[in-house]
Amino acid sequence: MASLSPQERFAAQLAAAGISPEKPLYAVLWSMNKAALAAQGAANAALEAAREGRKPLTQEELRTMGTDLFQWLVHYWKQMNRRAVAICAAGAVHFGAACGVTGWYLKGPITVLAGIKAAAQECQDYPDGGRLCRIPVWERMPTAQR
Image 1 (spheres, one colour):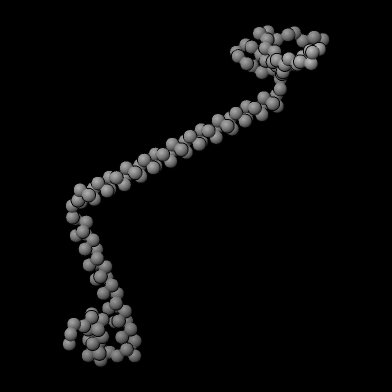
Image 2 (image 1 turned 135 degrees about the vertical axis):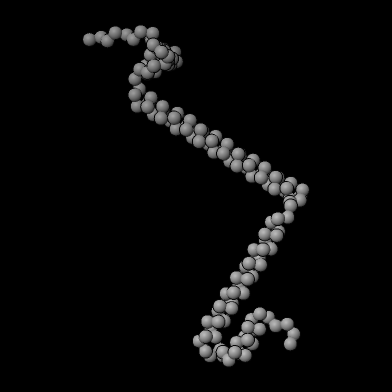
């Protein structure tokens, strides 16, 4: 006999013991044998991986790992910066819009500088067809007339 596979050897041993494929014990033993062979294969693969893991890294592998790590960090940093700039820009746009809407809604005197007030735009028509518009700024608000 040439070299038989482990499953063929086990089938021959079962036949020699008088356990034929029709018997329920055959299925149980066959399943157990398959599970044992699979576990042995997994253990051998784990041992091989452990041997491979014990080998020192070459300069080329270290260089590749360092380059990949550096590229990942640069990419991550750029993404964070882009995100921060986008968030700040969106915040500035929303803040400007909120201030504009608030000013439009109020349309009354608003503080230009501390202690100085500004009112809504005033326009004056001239006989030559021109029109002068300005925003009056008072240091002291005019007294209310009754």
